[in-house]
Amino acid sequence: MRRARRVVLGAGGAVVLLAALDAYVVVTVLIDIAEDVGIPLNHLERATPIVTGFLLGYVAAMPLLGQLSDRYGRRPLIHACLAAFALGSVLTALASGEVMVVAGRTVQGVAGGALLPITMALIGDLWEERERPVALGAVGAAQELGSALGPLYGGLVALIPSTVVAGVELGEWHAIFWINLPLAALAALAVHLTLPSRSRSAPQAALPADTAAAPHRADPEPAPQRSSSHDPVPSDTAGGRPLSPGTETAVAATPTGGPDGGPDGGPVGGPEGGPVGGAVVGRVDVVGGVLLALALGLLVVGLYNPDPAAAVLPPWGPPVIAAGVLTAAGFVWWEIRSPVRLLDLTGARKGPLLATLAVSFLAGAALLVTMVFVQFTAQTLLGADALGAALVLARFLAALTVAALLGGLLARRLGDRPVAVGGLLLAAAGYWLMSRWPLDLAGAGLVVDLDLVVAGLGLGLVIAPVSSAVLRVSTAAQHGVASAAVVVARMMGMLIGIAAVSAWGFYRFQSLTANLDTPLPFGVDAETYQRRLADYTAKVQAALHTEYTEMFLVTAFICLLGAAVAALMPSRPRTGTA
Image 1: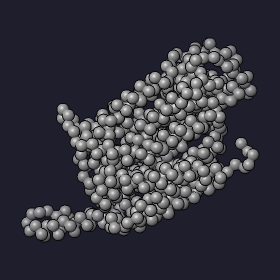
Image 2 (image 1 turned 45 degrees about the horizontal axis):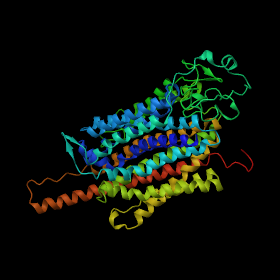
Image 3 (image 1 turned 90 degrees about the vertical axis):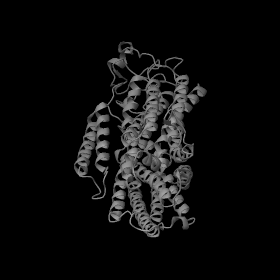
Image 4 (image 1 turned 180 degrees about the vertical axis):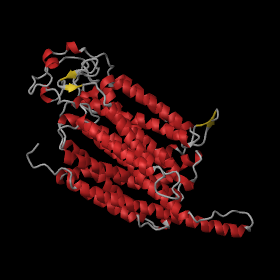
């Protein structure tokens, strides 16, 4: 059974890695995509929806589709998501305009966002409570590996020469998305061969009488063990007790029965989602999912300014952002009162939990701003190509990966809180150093590399303490949903952070270049034209330098805020406590 579970974990980890790679792969080729779909370099603000569209779909779909897998089974949902992921890849690869490439990336995000919670739910299905953290850590490692490898992977694949077949471009940046088709097919085949099929769940009447009639007893009897070829681990949590009300409906909760939740692989409970062990099972929080997606969508639309020359926000920005905030408040109100929740962490200590998720949010904002704008800096100020810019970013990503491992070791000795605070302070120092980069980056020598390493080390140190802290403030039955909540918070930080910081940055660039006149080669001799062009280019480069360094300074303040919030994370448990 252990070997079979490892195979399932490998297949699940592979689909998570595939989605994570595509979450970050676009940062390497964003300028190339922008040029091909008609976005000029002096209006890169129009390219931000290519990034935010994916993230919006990813975050909005993650909790809701994870719940759908509780109702309809893991394998069918993974197959559906892989098919949608392939469809989004095709739309992106064929895109010839802004709308189509954003639509394709959004479809990819929706599909990719569901794969992580479904895989975590599989771990809840198949692993015993004491073994579950190791499996969850493996899936989390696949997610983090995608962030580290994504930009380099994109830069390497984009080196494929231009190849046109039947009028369709298959090479360059398009190859990144065409390659997803065989990768998704292989992942679907692996899932089909390793995950048990889902059969119909038992009717409600077939449930034990004491469970069906008295689901809310204060001290229920241990559930009888069932022998089934599809049930490699004891059903339910330690001691056979049913989970607390509502926990089965959470993302990556621990359903009773087989790998797909029910006794034979189907979802827990009756065909209509009847109660099992005191919980409402099989119901999906559609209202919560819609409110969350709507709130995030309104915030992103309000922050997106296609013409930042006059103001940071577009004319519709303030009212749309206000509507987004009100919708977010409505989402919180609904989640507090709804019996079925997207991310049910009932019983967790709210103060430390919210502080930990806020740290994940702020770290996510700093991470994506770095990945996008270091890439822009290398391609515009250093004149690097996509792969060369990815190699510049690799200094940051390598330090991030090393520090993620180091952070876990330090947190074990010192506790989660001091490591998270120290990491964010170190990251703030790194971004402050980056904000002081000279205009002549090519002549800066090792300064650029060292500053990127400092920032990467700081952010990397935060990863393990955040993941550990959120598990300590939640119950064992909620470890899957707690881990998913950390990822949701980080991706939300990426989404809102890149939208807000880039809105300010692009406004600054437009304001700095508003009075520049583009030189034309008419009515002047060649020497005069070249002199004017060189002067114009130098001023544009100076404006880009100011934009990027100010954005890194803003990111330093984001990290300082994160360090202050990290001081509210749960403290190190006393020796001998659980």
